Length: 353
Image (cartoon, rainbow, N blue to C red):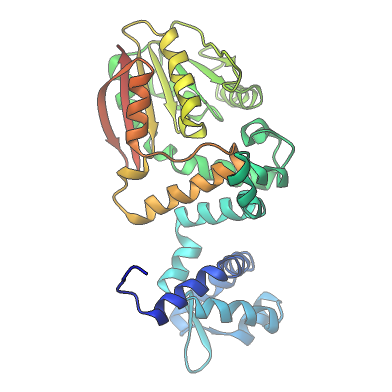
């Protein structure tokens, strides 16, 4: 066995935490939903709050709250003093109040939790075997517009959380070449198209996406009054010979290519190259696993890869940058710039060879 600095007693403790991790997770979800964390935090200046007081104020049995708080205390989520008063630890505070943690918990619980039971089958078959827990589709993208409202809300909040914050910084790069026509590939709900129309009053956007998502995006565009500047083009990238129109000054892909396998990414990039004149820029914005400053960001991305495996499509993941750099070269593109934006993202600026 490989030597490590972790003592056996500590190692078995870590192993037991993994063995019962779903119990801790669901207890945390319950404590959040019941308002226990919020009430404990509200009473912090009074030295905390007892189990009996929590039970009375929340109208939940002391037994039920007790079993939740016991595992939370063992997991260093809450502390209990000698008088029986509970307080949040720093971990407990982040579990209840940190925006990124909140988005991740809801995504895991609403979108992925039931489906993750089928992970082993997905690994063996290369198909998103857990998706059956949400609906009868080949990929989750086919069913996004049909998801249960709470599940849909959690999915889009997760997706948008890791892109919306960098749009303004990214648009400075997108618009520095003064594009008149942008193809937004994988336009999702139309957020980038709408914000680009607000950013530049002359640009026209063509959103290229699956029919269901395209309808949602164009409806959102119309609500914002930009239907004269934003159009749509339906496509299924998994078909044998996909094609896109010509005429783009800039082709934009934000957190899109990670939704595909390496072979599919190459097909998408090659399709784009075939539509591009020499002066067109192709911009890829992604969160690469090998370009994260903090270990927790890398961990989140690697966990997201398992979502792709079991829920989304069965064959994609969050990639290291080196994979994309190789595929860009193979597709007939040349990398002109490699730009870090925000806390997590990289923009790869490409042109035709």
